[in-house]
Length: 89
Image 1 (cartoon, rainbow, N blue to C red):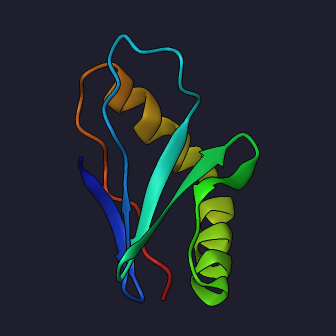
Image 2: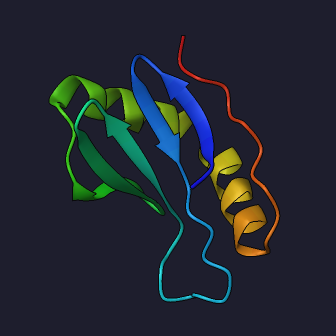
């Protein structure tokens, strides 16, 4: 699963799902030993969970970079590699 960003100990990844239209656009966030899945339309946690502070950081980052996340989703679903997205600083 390609890593598209990393900030404050949080790793953001997206799966390639070529030919699998049953999943809407989403990404995965991992922090220490916990993981969550975030949908992009709207940006929200749809599975798992992160500690409150990290969840808020991921929510803010995803809102800022929503268009880039959707672009990466389309790239991956067409079999192309995603582009890196700027981390929070």
